[in-house]
Image (cartoon, rainbow, N blue to C red; front, top):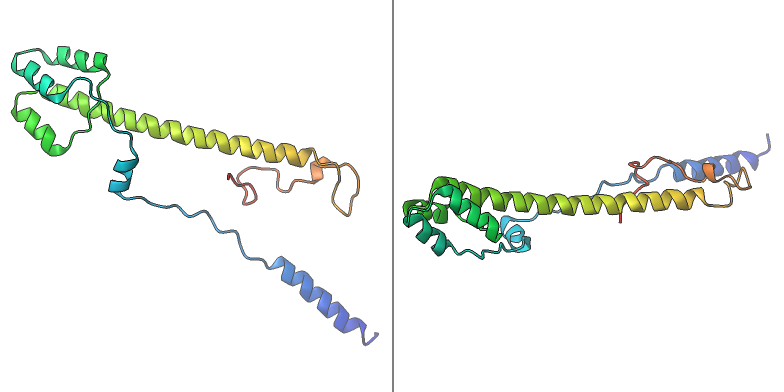
Length: 167
C-alpha cells in the first residue's frame, strides 16, 4: 500500500465524518407573556350600554332576558373583574345577565385568538406550498444525476420535517 494513500484516506474520512456530525436543529422557543402583557395586548371591550344603565334597568324590574337582549343588540362587551361582578350582583343585576356578560367577552377573546391562529397557520401553509413549488420547479438535479429532475431536488418533501419552517 502506498504510504501517502493511507493518511490521505484518513483525512478524507475525517472530513466526511465531520460534515455528518452537525449540530441538531433546535426547536423554536416559545416566549411566554405575563397576565399584564396579555391584558395590554387584548383589545378593549366596547360598551355602548354603560354598566350604570344596566344596573338602573335591573332595579326597575326589567327581566334578565330583556337585559341580555339589549346588551346583545347594542353589541356591548364588558371585561369585568370579580369585584365588579360581586358589586353588580349586590346592586340587583341578575346573575343570568352577569353570566352573559362574562361569557360574551370570553367568547370574543377566544374567537380573536382562534382567528389569529388560523391566520398564522394559513401563512405557514402558504409558505410551505411556496417552498415546495420552488423546489419542484428547479431545473437542475443533484450533482450525481445532472439534468432536469425536480422530484429529486427537495429532501424531505414532507412538511413538518426540521427543514420546513414558517417565517
